[in-house]
Length: 57
Image (tube, rainbow, N blue to C red; front, side, top):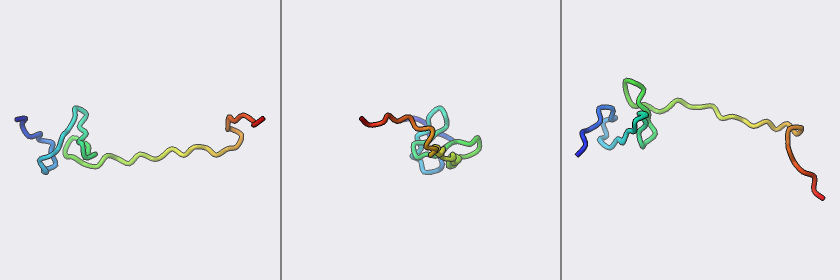
């Protein structure tokens, strides 16, 4: 059996990959497992001049 990963959050069920990411979504921050930082959502421009549409025949 594989030894318990020292980065485990304490639940005993952590599966942590080489990048420090657990299956539950937490990430190793160098000291503890924590939620990953929130990334802002990119909003697409709604400018009508930038659309590439073909006119219907």
